[in-house]
Image (cartoon, rainbow, N blue to C red; front, side, top):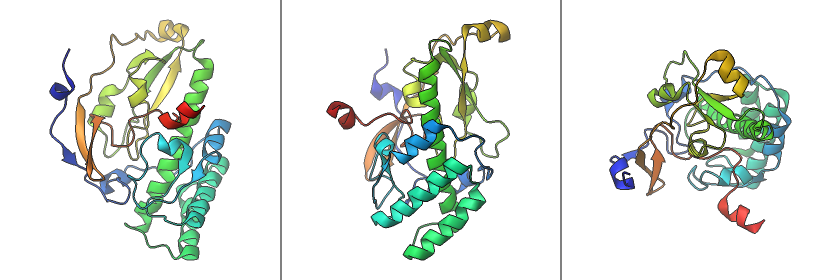
Length: 257
């Protein structure tokens, strides 16, 4: 078995704006249409979050976002609360990105907020990341409810993107049991503006479509990234901050239960 040291490659810095980690290139792949459904699980996930002011997107890490709603650079609780309400409305009502931008403009004007990046890029980051993660958390909750009947997941990559990630394309069609450890780090979304998803499968589905469960999970080297002045190891192909299950509780919160 290879060691961690053998499976990592040299550190690299994020090619992105420092305020939230998403690159300008990723923005070009965003679909501005509304999400198609409004699952109760996604709405509940968003509404249970606490408003937490932050200076940088690295102030909170991975699972901490399960319990906290943040907008990088939003340092007042009132400002965070208004963005939280706008995202909540987007999820509950199926708001489009263009509609969300109207709320974004009103909030910025109300609070006199000075932010990094362009209006289009900044509003897209807030909208896409929060809505996408809420839907993923709701999806995972639904998967757990039916895994006895539908015990497999297939990784699906959204075709036709202008800037596809090679690793995500390679994972397309991977079929593994719901409880396979690979999903702990690779359940989508796996990065800024990632719109990959999973399909649930039953044994009957495998027979009907001729699918086969993958012999093993795809191998991913651990890649060091310099984030917020520290080095973090992330599976190759996943953006720093996304290598966790959406909706997964922080360790400290789990220990308190």
